[in-house]
Image (cartoon, rainbow, N blue to C red):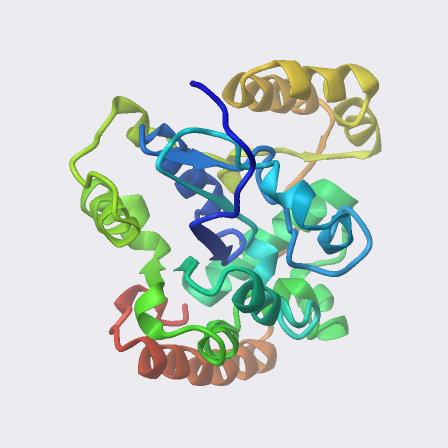
Length: 289
């Protein structure tokens, strides 16, 4: 594929973390009319120290992520919906690319937060039970990412609703072909494109071991960092999981006491109702469990 001068993206997957954004990024990358930024999660519109944000790298750096002749291009950075911990993201987008289309994947909030918590366990060695983790930091990225109504409201301050597609993660997981057709139509590319690779899921939390200290050292070794650069991502992730598997912790305790569960239920009932009122969709899979 011939490359051309850099440009700005036509669409952005803004979240939510652990709601299928890695899989959607992969599926979109397979479409012959779409280029996805690599590596995934540029986080350009976040003004924070790297790797959390890369706003300070400047627009030319961002444009250089999109140098394909394909008709449209885009990226996926789930941290774009972690307001207020990461503020002013919609504002920066609206000022730089006001016509950009936004895709917001959402998942039942407690299932999503448990998956996010397991990611913390794998990446940072978190060993606290989930209940303790949530009690001690209810303003963490892990919690904020499930505040779907509040996150969408921030974007609607800067973008019209017809530029935002809200989609249930369950729809993408269980009804993949029609869900992808909806995404393709929203983006204005051929909706009938299909491939057997659409049956492959990416970055599934329960399939990834939680490494102990030795496992993390092996995972983060120079050899594995080099492997990540040179191997196709599916092969790298299978290799990583196989190497870490003998050096893993058992799954952490994720049961919540009744008071904490009820508190979150009340909070997320408000957030889900706000989300539904803003986007005009019933979103039945988001009922708190």
